[in-house]
Length: 442
Image (cartoon, rainbow, N blue to C red; front, side):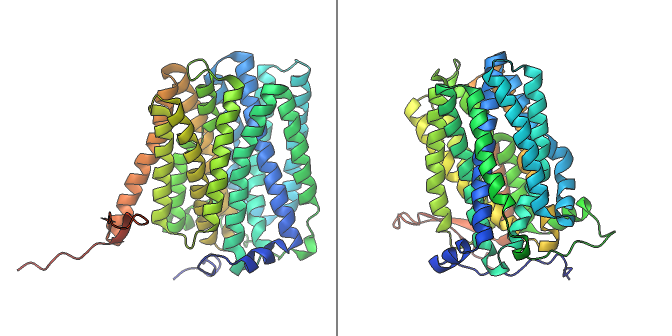
């Protein structure tokens, strides 16, 4: 029997109606959260790309670019899980405002020094580390506050919208940064990211606290991180999305490193203009993915596994086939599948957790998301530096594809599922259906 404190909440199935969407955006606090999330997502990824490019300009070494990525995401491995406990015990709005302020100050200092030509490698590493710590503490609080703004029956729609907004920002940001780097340099790109962050910070700071639903903090001695881990491991709708996220985050979400390698001399040698093109195409794919995500009628584990495999296959196609047109098509496709996976996995994990423990569950999710990218930055950066762009793309796409096949096989065996091919119906050529029972032995 499940603990009522951590039992999953009830949500309405089916596709959200337009009336439901308008009702959500009629909430002032929800509008503010969406604006803040979109701005901070764009700014974060703008700064990440600019820092990566600045490191490449200062050192010319892709492995050191990967180390800068690790310093931006690595603190999540240390502080991420504990940040979930903090998000469940303290005012989430205050946590976000403080950490965003720290991020703005550190990045603003780096932007000024980079513009003046005074940036040094050690300084970039320090700023990346400070920004990474701030982001690790902020993320669970930002995600968990959504349950204080919308009622449970609308939470699925709100989570899906927020996940789409966050990941679209994660693809628009690099595109904007690539363009700015090409025209005015990496320092000005970091400065622009700071300005965009200020917009989101103001939006979040104006949340009406009196309209936030209160959250009963967990009782003392009820446990922290360990409780969340046990809770997640017992729920397939939390466990398997996080497992698949690990492979996508570690290998498939190292796009800035991959695109840097593709735009460099050992790749297609297209420079910053090419980098901007790749990130723009991925952003176009993300918009398509967001539209398809909004049309999703249901959330299923098998769909999450399929999207993981499709995302890996798109990366594999982009890097292995030695044709520039195929590469560009693959980059667009990976944007589509990345958003579909991200919105589905994010929504499934949040909707499977009770509000009293949601901060810690989001923290676990964030640890895997950011920590995987921290490890992947070094791994894929080293592969790109030593073995070349094509091998890096093959590893980045092949590992999520392999993980998807393994998890899909486990789910199929557990639920007696199989594939059915029908070439007469082009809308549903391949379907997942229940396996027919074997005939009795005579």
